[in-house]
Image (cartoon, rainbow, N blue to C red):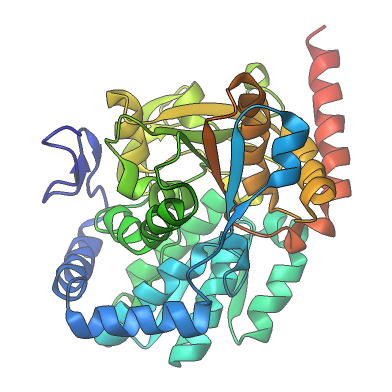
Length: 410
């Protein structure tokens, strides 16, 4: 690992990250950064966090040998890191527990969050109920339709879900709305950001709390195989599950880290959400990263069948890791992800989140090209309960959009 790897005091990973926000938000973020640095290594804070991880979330999440998948595909041995078995059904709870504990210590009366697939919104509503704080969740209108089950779950948990009808009515629009709320209500409100994006200290904070995934994996791999894996594969939207999964292996030259972005209808169509694969650096939501941009340099329209990956930017740490070769980033289409969604369900009896299915799809292509002594671990970042009600409709829409594009470009 490069000696200068990591987050600078100004919040940069190389040229990426930083704090590009309106002046009123600067002291708000500075307060969060100071509190995070104060508590992250505090023994009492760590003890409380570990208590909730074990007795409330159900950690550690299992490392499962996908025997049927391995035998069917041939080649490398495949393991699944079962973050889908966490309380609330995804990796998001690892981060929301840590941030809600911080919010309480900072005296916040209210937490807000953005959500796309709804899993971060559910996790935020869950911890707000547990810790007794008011909770408001911003969600793009299109995502509320696709993920109506998660909307109900958030409301059941006591959260107020605000439907955002601006812009593309997606995850970016939800983040825009949440940031505006923070500007107005920062004296009483903690913004519980769900991915490894945003201005400093959020990318570093999310990495810290999600690193529990790779801490567990290091122990579990030694127990099962007495060695590290050869490949780690995770889906990447903003990048929280991937950065936590990669964390303790970054710089290990024996382990290939692979982030899988959503290629949507195909990179050539422009209907994708794969900024590292198909865009250039820019600024979005207060930080610098690879970001899809229009001709004026503003964040551009993006698309993915997976609401949780439908974001035009990506975490600054992932942007840096791509540039310096610490990880490899690839893209998988809607159609490949849909195939993987069905494949794992029928082969192993595990229904994955459509986001996680992107990582599975790449593993399905990679495994047969490798020898049987190689080991792949896929981070199964969430379960697919939230997707089964809308997957057929989403699949139909994806095929219709692709047919429309093909006709227009014949």
